Image (cartoon, rainbow, N blue to C red; front, side, top):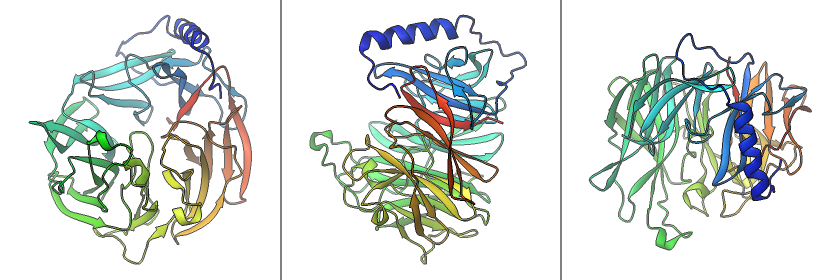
Length: 405
């Protein structure tokens, strides 16, 4: 990872890449097609605020190199950053700052706009797919100076949008907004994790903490909140899922979600895994996995299911910062047990990274290392790690690894 390029070098590199990669961009909407590969990566060159984002095709996860030269579609200007949703080769992004909600794809080395619609209703945090054509996004919107929970249901075929307010639990005294985490759709219901948060930055970093997590159970047909689940053993049920996942459903339809208290300035609660069993709308009272107690008080920043009751957790070192070193842990999520920390280089990447894809029972993990950046193959059946494709050419951050087909 090229993390320490000086400003002139970064500026020149970004300029050269933009010239080389985007000389013939087009927003034509005729017969949209995706890149030839099955996988893609969202990559960043430079550092804030002098940064450019690209979507690169990955010819192979297991061998060769991945470079932006001749292989990168610049996102900058169309899509704000790595908070994008990808499904079946199409990318979706809600940019409240520019007032746009869009659907995009990559063709001929450029990000192509399939359709953009005006959108300022909410600042998105998380999402769930009801089916391949129906996307629900959740976030916060302002109503007369007061924050409220909101949703938007998007029919992605034509990007028609239906919006509404969520009837979430009222703010306790001293709290003025919601921190939204995981979202899952199952059997006609949406499960939305959230916590209460403060906007009193005068006391940062010692922000007020409300010792409770919540999960709203929502009727997906009416978007009415039918019930609220709460628990006080941990807080903040996942960071913004538009960056990285903190939940999944297993083969039985059981929902698992992980908390990340430090993301919401809670420096005392553990990162923990909870379960909502198939057919239930309450927490499984027989299940609670204190993940922090197994990783020297570290936090679970993201979690991916790899099958057969196992999951990989991107694990942040203990402390008050979310911009810190990460490792990757394997857990027996079904039985609530820690298995091991994978023998990978220390991940020095961004705070939130979509780092794992699963294919044919194997996990492929993108690691932002101090020197060279690789995709690593982990085979849980043999407990074997194998070094795969290498990212080359002055890339500063690997932000997303995606399966596009």
